[in-house]
Length: 124
Image (cartoon, rainbow, N blue to C red; front, top):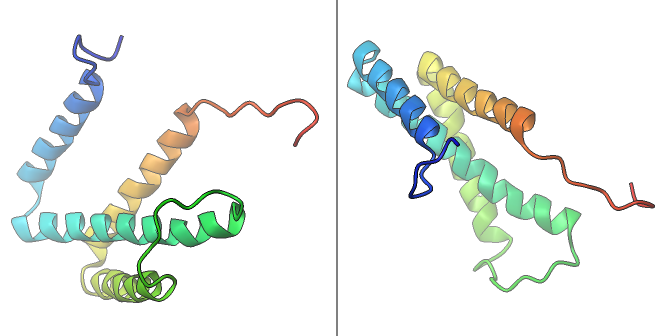
């Protein structure tokens, strides 16, 4: 099993720890902060963008939580976050591309390891 007795994914913790140590040894503090801020901003951007995608793809789903000021507030967030991402990418391309690469690598690993959703017969 890849989890310990408490249900903690030990292999994931070991890999993340090794990556963090490698990053601390090979990069400056400024580069690490830029890499992390770009990656976190991109993740937040994609999450908020997912609100719009979800509402378009699944309009019938119940919405127990209402986004305050929708659609204006998430649009403002996306504009500001998008500006920050472009500004960081132009100013610090190495760190930004490393962050983008990390997210793309994670998406690739997710796609390879996720369990496919079973489609009931008669549906496609």
